[in-house]
Image (cartoon, rainbow, N blue to C red):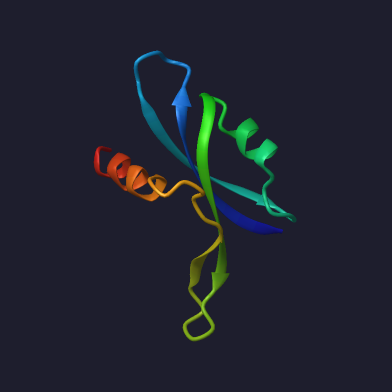
Length: 88
């Protein structure tokens, strides 16, 4: 079983909230599909973009480090994610 970290950008059901972000982990044998990501992001009305990372052991120190499996599709998503993280 592999551990994936999914970071999601989108709009939640509450009106007027604008763009929101959510991160969660998924433990499964396969890379998360878009359908699984949308199903897990239950409070989101729509998912605008997402990034998937898998944690793999570092060959030199053994600590688990994130490896990007699927990066943001939209160029502005990385900046939007960082801006939302700064507001927490």
